[in-house]
Image (cartoon, rainbow, N blue to C red; front, side, top):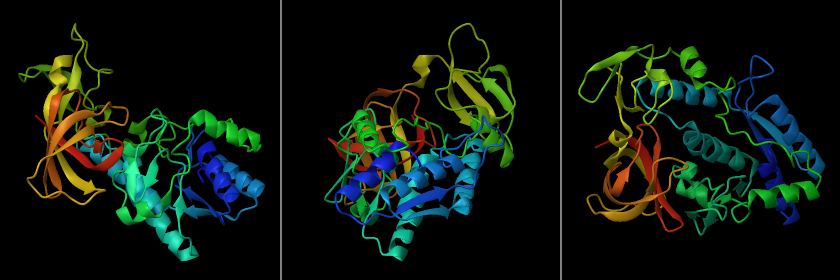
Length: 341
C-alpha cells in the first residue's frame, strides 16, 4: 500500500472478495528538505495508507527498505555518469516489489501478493491492462516468473475513473488524491540533485555535431539524455542529443532525422515465456519507452543479449532504458537498451 488511491482500492476489493488482507508500506528512507520537496513514499503517504488500513480493519506494516533504495539510487547516479538514462521504476519492481516483498510474504505466510499496477496476470502470463493510458506492463518485464504467478493485479480490467469511483463510494481518504508521477526518491523535482549528491555530475566536455565539429561546452553528463532538445546550445535550427560518450565527455547533437535508427542492441534480456533458442528470430512488437507506441520488429536472441531489427525507423533509442517485447496483449520479455545503429 503506497498511500495512493490504486493500492487503497486493491485492499478494499480483496477484502470484499473474502481474502485475509495485510497492508505493507515500503519506506525508502528519503525525505524532502523543504515543504516543496516530496516523495511518493513519504511520511504523509505512510499515514494515508495507515488510515485506509484502519478504515478497512486490516493489519498494516511500514517496512524499512532504506538500504535497498540506497543501492537503487547509487545505480541511478552511476548510470547517468556513464552516459545512460536509467529507469529505476523497472528495477524497483524487479528487485524490491517483486523481490524483497515476496520474501516478506513468505515470512508472514501469505499465498499471494497484490499490487495497484494496471496490468493483467493470466495463467502466469503478463498481459496489457484494459486501460491503455494507465497500462504499466512496460515496468514489469523483469519480474520473476514464479513471482508473477503469485501476483494479483485487481485493477487490470478497470479504468482510473472507475477506481476513483470505488474509492469515493467507500469514503477512502485517498479517493481524490493526486497521482505521483515523479521518481519516488527525487524529492526536489530535479533528478540531477540525486546524481550530484551520490558521486558528482559526471564528466564535463564538449558538444559535437555528427562530423565531430565542436559546438560548445557543457558542465556534466548528468544533464543529458538521448532525444533531449532542451538545454542545448542555440544552433539556429532544432538539434537533439544523439549520443553521449562517458570517456571523453562529449555529447553529439543532430537534427531530428538523425535520431532515427532501425537496429537496437539489448542486454540483460529477461523472458516471461520460455526463452527462445539463440539465433532463432521471433516477431514482436517492441516498446523503447513507457509511452512509446510499439513498433513491429524482429528480435534475434543471443543468450542474455538480443539484436532488434525494426520494420521502420524509431526515434531516440536511449541506452539505459528498457526495451519490452510484446505479442498481442502478452509481454514476452525485455531487456536494457545498450545501443543502436
